[in-house]
Amino acid sequence: MNARIYRTDVIALKKILIDLRLEKISDLSKASNINRNTLSKILREEIQPSADVMDKLVHTLKLTPEHAGSIFFAHPLRIA
Image 1: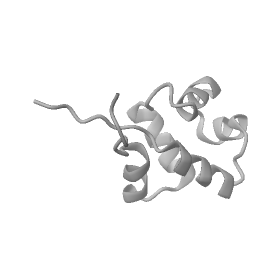
Image 2: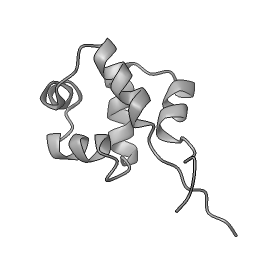
Image 3: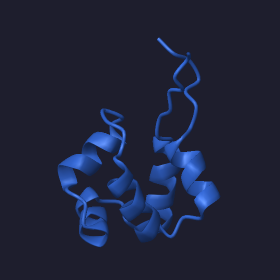
Image 4: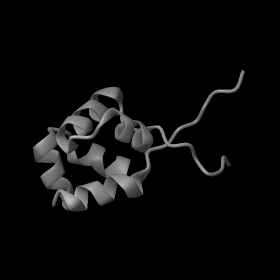
């Protein structure tokens, strides 16, 4: 059985943050009530966001379900 591996499309996420003028992690942290360190690790692709963090980001960034899915469940181009 093959497990699917997903990653967060950080580039798409950063574009949305710029469009919403949430260019600083501290601004996004305040708006979403997510720890700055957690956001930093997500944006550096060190961790995948938990379901709770994804939910907070979806609501803060006003993402549609389809857009959220394409960001948080992107398929990696290659698997090392």
